[in-house]
Amino acid sequence: MSKKIKLLWDFRGPDAKETAKHHTIHLKEFATLENLSFLKIDIEEKNSMLCSAFIVVDEKDMKTYRDALKPHRGTLYTI
Image 1 (cartoon, rainbow, N blue to C red):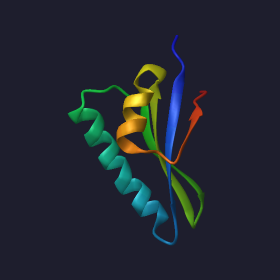
Image 2 (image 1 turned 180 degrees about the vertical axis):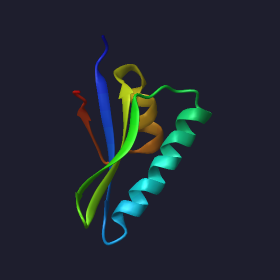
Image 3 (image 1 turned 135 degrees about the horizontal axis):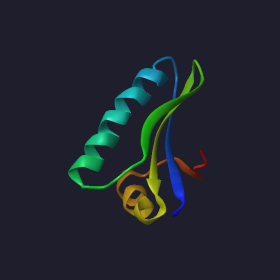
């Protein structure tokens, strides 16, 4: 079983949640256009002023996503 990587983009301010939701649309579009697989795309709300959009991908695809989309950070994904 390959490792899963969670790539995250952080958004701050009163519109953080809506911006993160919108960003997930672009993550899905990119994956579709590039014919890349992913496990999950969603948002995480830390508080009302900080929200993150994220995508969970196989380790083998991580560099493609990272180089093209420039996430703010990444972590190992555990279920």
